Structure formats: C-alpha cells, structure tokens
Image (cartoon, rainbow, N blue to C red):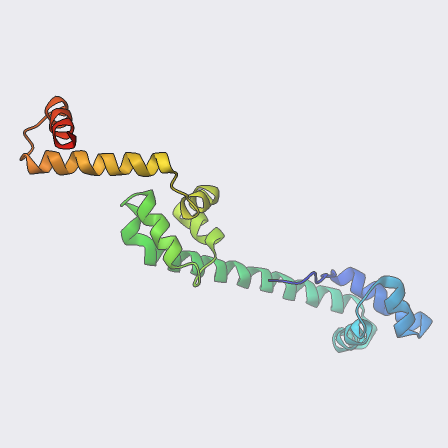
Length: 174
C-alpha cells in the first residue's frame, strides 16, 4: 500500500530552490513549505547539476523531458502487463463469466484485480459479489431439489417428465 507521499512539480521545486538561496536557511523554509527534511538539499543538488552556465531553464526543460519519458515508460509497462494478462487468460475468455472469475481468483497475487477486470471486460463489483457470495438456506434447498430432480431424470434414462418425476419423488417420500 502506498503512503501519502506528495509529489511536487518541477516549477515548484525550482521556485523553492531559488527561495532557499535567497534566505539561506533550509530547515526553516522546509517547515514553512511543509516539505520533508532534506528535500531542499536534494533539490539544490539536482538544480546545480542541470544549471549549466547559469541557465535555470535547463533544469526545468530537462526535468520535463525526464518526466515525459517516465510517463511513456509507465504506459509501456502497463501495456505489457495488459498483454500478459490477456495472453494468460485467452483460453478462458470465451468460456463465460464464471470461468473468468475463477481465473481472476487464481491470479490475484500476480496481477491487480482492477487490471484483470479492466482487461477481461468484467465489472469489479460483480467479481467481488461472486467471490463473497453467501448461500442462503433457501438457495441451498433449491440446489438440493435440483440435484435430486436431475438424478431421478438421469436414473429414468431421460424419459420422465415433470409429472412423473413429481410422482416418483412423492412416492419415494411416503
């Protein structure tokens, strides 16, 4: 689980660094801006590294490029992960929603549920309700009756209809 870590844009960092050079007091400025301790020291180091020949814009421009590259790399990783999920679940996709749910349940530790549901076209809420389903006594009774009806039907070689199965059932009970 991720913490509540703030991310600051490069323009804010640049202004904070320039302000820290003006005031020449890092700890007080960090408290005023609500930053973690050592943030301005790290940002100053980055600023010096990219500030070649006194051009402060190099810092912002190079960091914006880095930011774009990181965003594109993140998209590539996400696309590769989606492809991997689809590749592994390909044989289950045409078999129906319950089979897809079993696949999702079996791969919860490998992939995020959100990603699998998105790729496989399944509603997350439906998956969670399927996963956490509780069978009531009425549903349990109906399932038992259906099993008993099918067992009579198959025992009689598919010949009995509803009336004969009912009669068979009543006759067995008495």
